[in-house]
View 1 (tube, helix red, strand yellow):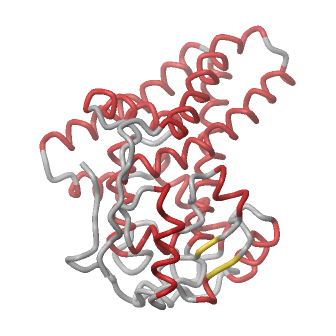
View 2 (tube, rainbow, N blue to C red):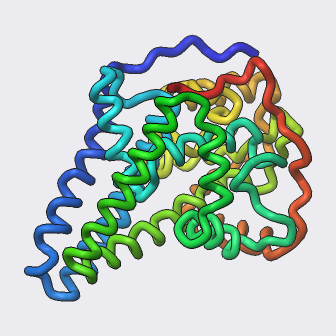
Length: 299
């Protein structure tokens, strides 16, 4: 099937508004730290987690279809979106498009390992890049095919790690609190990936991901629930994913057993995924479904 003909705005204002929340929260968090009680600091961290989680939806969409198309603005937003989630942008970009290449099957750097439960999966993916990063750093470095991408990769590590180290040296409690916030946020992000691919099958074009029709989740998280359509046509803008899902369903490319009205953050869905991935062997995905006709990434 050919992807639907779609267009996206030069400036995705809803997405930019969500990112603006981080620009309001981050300076306030840093500048108010020494003036707040520990209760106030905890409240700022909870607000920061919510802002991070929401900004991840924007970061994800921006990697596929830029939320700001003018080149200079796109470049700047890429850096700050990465910083908002604690990800070196170009590194996470390469990691994410490896995921789209292999659809959670063999070759996907972040796929669930055999016998790995849900809790270990999210902790491993969140902690590994920080505490034993050599394999993943090597993977993203080799995947950076151009000099520009490698320069961006280095820059983005400097931006994220430099910001963190600077805050730790300036005010240790502040820097370590930000680091803890990033870790909790990244655990939440990897949970989304696990839930969005629960019982998916990389060998079947109708089973690449779960489709969540939750109105709440799709309204606030830019149609992230339509994940089967997103994996089938990664370059379709988020505004058009519901229509793309209807087109796929009409051609029997959305498996009914991989549809749910629950969101990935609904406690019922969380409990189901944790029970289903309770350290049982992971053998559903056996090969990549990537084809020459599958859209890849924007640059």
